Image (cartoon, rainbow, N blue to C red):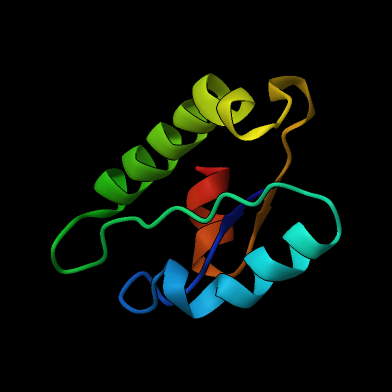
Length: 86
């Protein structure tokens, strides 16, 4: 499960959501919680690019961590959902 956190495009990091990663792991999933650049250091396009690259990285590398690239899902919250949709 790739989880994309929210935070108004200006706050948070994956560290704030380690509880989600832990819950997924305890339930037998492999969690991927990527960071992405935040405003004002990056634009929406930069954020979308970071999310895209994280998804691509997961597909290419998840098998190294015991995952199956054919069973990847994405969950996202707030601005993270917006970026994922884009």
